Length: 363
Image (cartoon, rainbow, N blue to C red; front, side):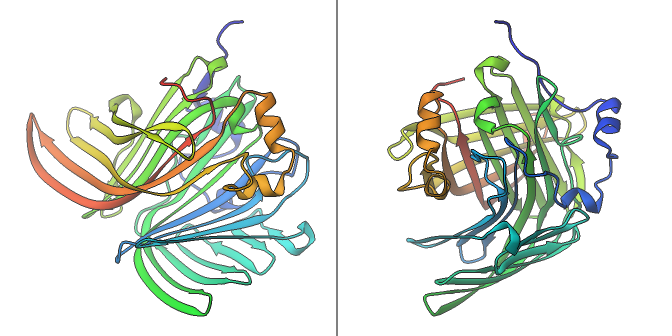
């Protein structure tokens, strides 16, 4: 069987077929799926706080591991503060939820998120945890071309970084203890019509605020039927103004492989994105210092998804898949070069991830 096509939808006809323009519209951050079998959707928010803490809240209409045609709304909460790591989640029946198609307005039980591509309010509520968060954009919404990655044309994964970077403030109460945070935040919106583990082998994704610069980077590798096609993605802005995002000017390298005992997967501790369009040259290097979250999707001990889908473990084993996740923090270095000379060097804390759907293999 020959290689199937996989590509980023970047043609004028793609924009027309999808029904979007180059400029991101408010409705694009609204609900984009219909609860059909294979569909999934989530709104992701993270914060890298001034005290070194990391906060992640994700609102799902359907999880990526959905095994039935219906909504399965949930929200996950994750806070890492020093050596303390708190994970929590809530679920709700579809009748107690709201997913607005005109803007980001999501309600899952008593938890919600709402925003307009610039200002967002989040609330998370469970028996143990309550969190109230605001995010105010410091950079305009962006997507890689249409944001659609097409697999054999009819299958897709869509990604919209609605807030590439912004100011985040949070008040979190856990077991009666209240904490307040300020820092840099990020929000993106993802959806698709086929389980990602069928079309993707793995990806690295990261983002950081480095001085006055904002960076989003990703390196996606398609699954074997799609020839392990690579999708290099890079966005850089300064003071909220885009500097570059054309993947043809990007060179990607990964090094310092390490084996994770929880996921039984290798990951790379150093990722390098080199962007050089002939008039400007930037190098961004991620160096992992600590893993703050890991889970194996089909393992009910580590995965919220497996707890809510009892047959998931059987499905992924029958399909010879092994989806897993590693979230890392560390130092992100930005270098601006002229010729071979580094004329600007800045370091900042960052947060990034490896999502690995296939079996452990270097591709």
